[in-house]
Length: 315
Image 1 (cartoon, rainbow, N blue to C red):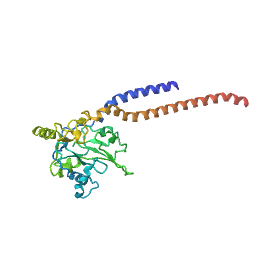
Image 2: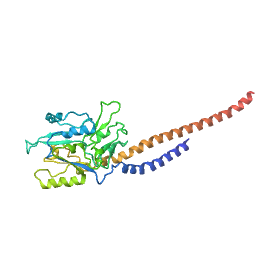
Image 3: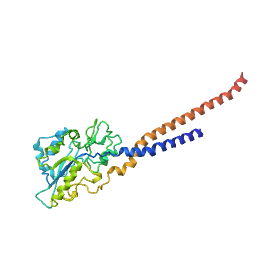
Image 4: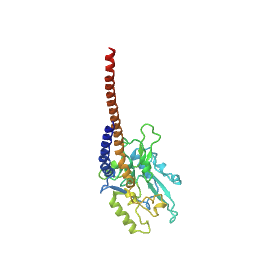
């Protein structure tokens, strides 16, 4: 029994050494969302946005979300409170006071930032989130198990959950209209409808160049920064602003390191442990039962041998 268990433990240790060490490195590499050289992006010029909210209406139309007539989106009272995206609203526009120009507030469109290395994808162990070659972070509801780790991981507080949908709930967020932008000449719905061209769609690298050119040509109009160029490793949505970004609702404490870099070592072990631990438990159970069965059989044979002489005497 002891010899059998020692052999099993030795086998288990060899198995773990062979599986966990190299497997963890491979898993870590595989979990890193791949970057693409020609990802698309959108540059949002906050000095141009007029707060018309046509982007909100068009987003609902394109994504098949509950919508209302255009006249509803002309209601400016919604700017009295700061709004966030939710399960059936993928983009919102908020208003911020401008101390430099009190008569010209700053309107800020908010949606998924579509990170270069998305935190939501890094924590999703069923791969329901992935970075697409277009630059979009796409979601597959058929894979989602509803753990909502993505909601906790997102540094921009974007993913929402359909809590009222009891049977087929989904995590929802801006899709970047990825099916549209995959086609030649396709653009996100919000970009198409913007009446003042505050939104510019194109290759991310080109947009960064354009953003810095705008800042350089009119330094008094913009703060010298492009939000999304480096934050958490960079995002596909980029912003230039007349005010410091912390004054218009953006987090400025995120740093430049991608969120997955902080958790990749731990998360790389999750899939290995989920497979290895149950397997080892099963092997141990089989080994223990096998040993018990051997002992029972031996005891039965010994008992039979001891009884035979007595049986013979009785006869």
